[in-house]
Image (cartoon, rainbow, N blue to C red; front, side):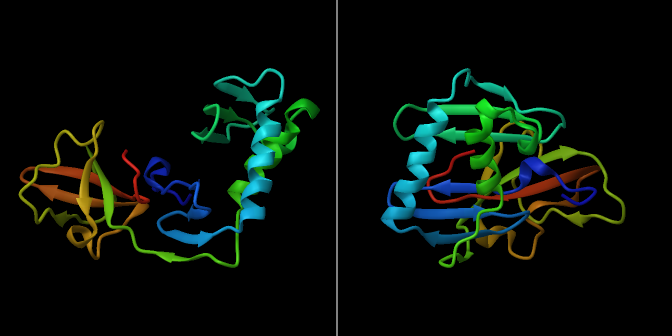
Length: 189
């Protein structure tokens, strides 16, 4: 992330659907691709190995550092793990988890193509960014979207910064820091 970016507004880093369709998020955009059944099975095998790691719980520390990952698996026995630390520092017992996180964080595939989201999760909190601010051109108020994002169609935010890049917005006598996180199909924030 660059200074001033909002990490929570970045798209999901890696989403694999049962059909083998994969979505890979960056700082602001998303790519979509298709894994072969053998590639999908290999990834599922690695998840099975992670499930067998002794001591896996909802929070795992790999070692030093403040880097965080959040791994959510809904297929089969669900996993929801917040991982802190550098994967390279993981003890031997946690190497399958660390390797999986590293591979998903740097995932690339020849089938990936740019994806145009149909909607975004809008969040706004009072605050100012350096420089000026844009007027808010819509009737919906920004208040109340900090903890409960509002879903907005892509057409409504054309030409606005998206993902981790925030926008400075003026509405009435208040200034807001607005983020628009691209959503993959079926995702609800």
